[in-house]
Image (cartoon, rainbow, N blue to C red; front, side, top):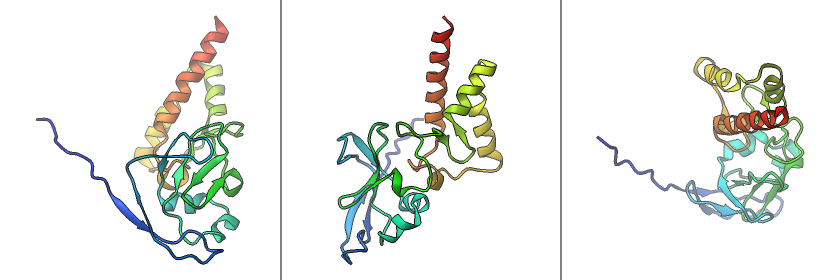
Length: 177
């Protein structure tokens, strides 16, 4: 019948965040629940420490003693990529272009298999459709993906790719009519 499974709310103790001040304090964060970005005040979501660690520049990493407890701001017009109660990280702290942010070139959607809005738009312009979702799904099942560490949001890109394809098709269709 129907499952009564309810996801648990997990709490994690995180380590110190600011290496420059040598502060060793622990804080708790939850994988559920959202907090507001300190700049744009939009809801942000918790991202795994391994995601943050993998995507930061060496210089930004050197300023942190812990990568856990950060939130990801997906608001395109906001300069903030990651933040916690003590630190804000922006595009300048990242070694990849955060495609979700305004003005990002290329506007990467799939970090595992290198699909950008520009690549999808070109495919739609040339063929009337995009095979990005088919390609990504095929590769996910054959060679695998690493969304948890390659995608700044720390999650699978399929939703973002699907949304972009619809938007690009709609804008392409409106140009033709």
